Image (cartoon, rainbow, N blue to C red; front, top):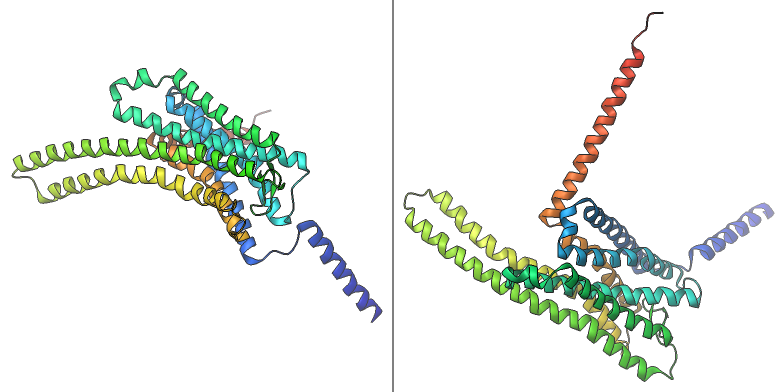
Length: 361
């Protein structure tokens, strides 16, 4: 009996030590959120690294002006993935602040800077597409590399100003609702100033970017539909003249017209829809949080943060990897790696055959 009691006590001590290192017990929703966070980190890391490899591998992508905006967006997403997302995962598991106050302020500064910079980079990409589609003949004179550098300079200055002000006024720290180091004001004395800053910050980042996205992409959609209508008129006139055309060919032409009309709408809906789906819940939650009378579910706070982080995993596919140029670059890289591996394997095979040939002494 004493031996059994000692064994039970030892098991209890081991379990308590385990939970001391791992953290407090989590419910099912928190476990699912942790799994979701891990998936977002992995997808975001791999996809953004792939975009960076394509940018470095293909000189044509580097020559294009949108490549600079994509590079800046990729840089922000990649740095956010390796700096803020893992610490949010640690805060979610341990339910405590990761590191000291100074370290958390640095992480919160990065989170504010990178999220703002990524939103403005998306707005810059939409402006570039608007100029390219609406003013195609004047695109190369309106959007040069120095013009893109000026726009990126503004995004950096805009992001740096808001994040610096928040850090200097000690409005950056660990927020339990989001389990991360972000904008937070634990002091009641400066609550009014913090409310004004938060509304001003989200108005000039999220709302401004959303207005720019809607204005530019709706203009692009209008021009695209106009061109599709002209192409459809020409196609229908051709089909009327070709009386002896086979019905299957006529049907394929009509289906291609329908797909062409839907393609532009799907792209515009993807650009604006992913932006709203990922960022709007988090921004609305931050605004609602300013009213203490409105309760917010702690699980919803983490969900909204995960949605905001998921934009870093979506951006490589929305803006880069699904485009023909990036697909071709990825294919070239894979073919080059496979060819090199096959050449190395054949070289080793010939070397082994040469070693196996007996030599006359």
